[in-house]
Image 1 (cartoon, rainbow, N blue to C red):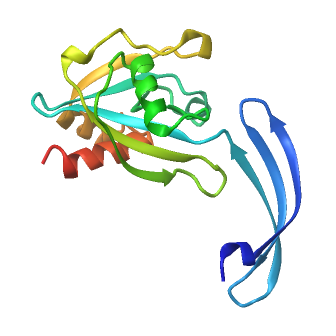
Image 2 (image 1 turned 60 degrees about the vertical axis):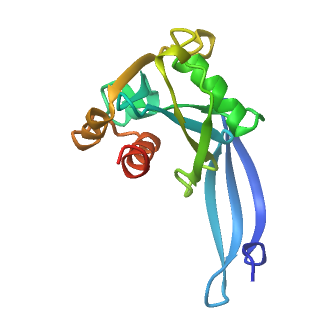
Image 3 (image 1 turned 180 degrees about the vertical axis):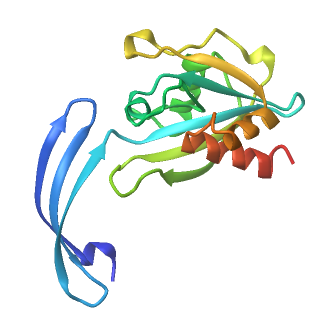
Amino acid sequence: MSISDRIRVKDVRVLSSNYATVKNTTFEWRRADGEWQTQQRETFDRGNAATVLPYDLARRTVVLVKQFRYPAYINGYDELMIEAAAGLLDDAEPEVRIRLEAEEEIGYRLHDVKEIFEAFMSPGAVTEKLHFFVAEYEPEMKIGDGGGLAHEGEDIEVLELPVDEALAMITDGRICDAKTIMLLQYAALHIFR
């Protein structure tokens, strides 16, 4: 039995469609015991996205960004968020989009980007699937200052860090962004061994 055999959507109401679409959905779910149960969920849909961790194996460095994140702020985080460059796909292929995001946010034109996995970051409420990439970089690949696009509200600081320092920043709490932690853990296991 597939999932589609176990769900009957009864009602979908759009609550908001500004930055993202927030929907309230009423559905019936067939439980493991065969009984149908009515449930209601709100979903937040802003589209899928991609993220990248540029790394320099010879110098043992990575490039991250630092920027203000309002949702983290209202949840008590009073620092700029340190994270991997990322962006919404906006109907582009993930590899195409992440190359553009790298140029906009960190100022590097990355050559060989490698998709390492995909993940749902908060599947209980958010529909977004994130495509994770790594890419080797060299100083000669720098084409600009990065910083993001001001008209999109981006005000990004570019950080080039030793990978060991970035990993230590997870432990001491300075890096608390899930996608960045996942990429740095991947790099520790598979790149900087």
